[in-house]
Amino acid sequence: MAGASSGHERPIAVYGAMVANGVIAAAKFTAAFFTGSSAMISEGVHSVVDTANEGLLLVGIKRSKRGPDEGHPFGHGKELYFWSLLVAIVLFGVGGGISFYEGVTHLTGHVAKERQGSVWWNYGVLGIALLAEGTSWVIALRQFLPTVEDESFWHALRTSKDPTVVTVIAEDSAALIGLVFAFFGVLLTQLTGNPMWDGIASILIGLTLGAVAFFLAYESRGLLIGESADPDVVEDVRRIAREDCDVAEVGQPLTMHLGPKEVLLNLDVRFHPELPAEQVTAAVDRLEQAIRDKHPEIKRIFIEAEAFRSRQRERAAGERATRQ
Image (cartoon, rainbow, N blue to C red; front, side, top):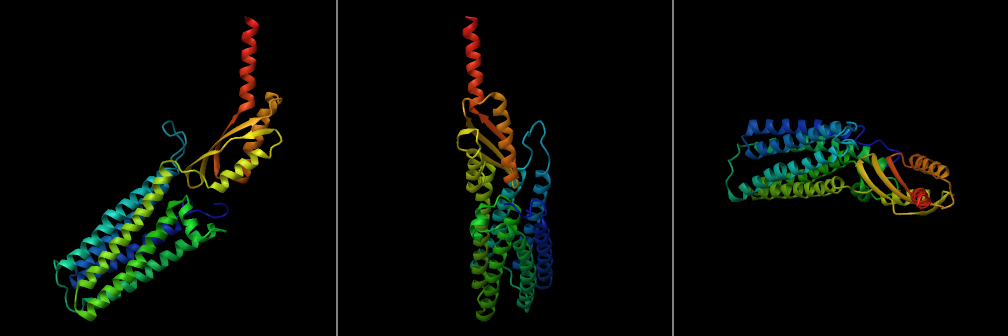
């Protein structure tokens, strides 16, 4: 999206989330050390997984910046989408799985009894986690909001081609919702003395993480298999070609994202039949420049010039008829 720095170029949100999750993991493991709480140990593992997820995103960012080579002539931009998919799988399989399992063990009674007073350690950890996750969420949101422009927030999130900031926003939003569940789970358990509420909270956290992981996996899947550019961009490219004085007809532009800010364009253009080959060549160069000026994210442009190819075929046919 034009006019805004992407998380791919400056992964501030990813670094912020990594620091926040590292602080939260340390707080949870500290609580587990003093209370012997298996729930806090599991939650500490969960935060370590979130920290590792940010590390995977940074690996994806670095690898996606490699240029074209013999085996990858269009570059490595889609590496970022692969690593984002891996984050979704880890989030679902480990983060959601551990939380769900911990909830089930509470409901079935197969959980170690916590030491007296551990509930206050839980409240302290929840407060630290809320502060750290909230800070990370605000950093990611401030980086993402300038790209929203005239769209709704949800539509901009769904159509964004940069998974780094989107992943951090989704993970932090899920974490904040999970903290609300955890707070009420701890509170109701303290008030009633029934660990069932803690178990229900853990299950809800696991389901929330699973839902976010499914959303991230679905979005990464679309980009991995070749998602097109924004429909408004595609239509504007077609308009630019139609308005050229030498163009007679324009086919449907074919686009594909090779990275958050790298689009491949294939454009079928039919020029006026009376144009000489030199003028068709000049028109192709003019179209490519006009498209790049308006949409700099379109890095690779392939224009199929119908009039030029037709004239070549007619010339070749005429030469064959003369020889005969």
